[in-house]
Image (cartoon, rainbow, N blue to C red; front, side, top):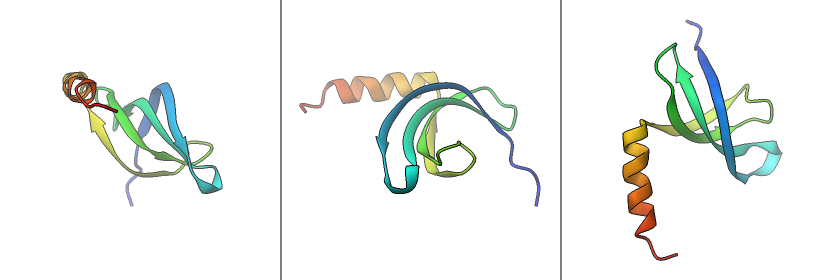
Length: 73
């Protein structure tokens, strides 16, 4: 199996912590030497294992922010 390459360029914040030390984080991540994207997913304590998540460009994140700003929480 080919090596899966990623680099967490910037750790932005932790959204929540689950059992076993896994954390849902938002980070700026470069996948396969590509331009970094904003990424939300679960990570193990040492960021060596990851769960499924979503990666967003800066433009997509800006649109998401606008949508969230309109939600009455």
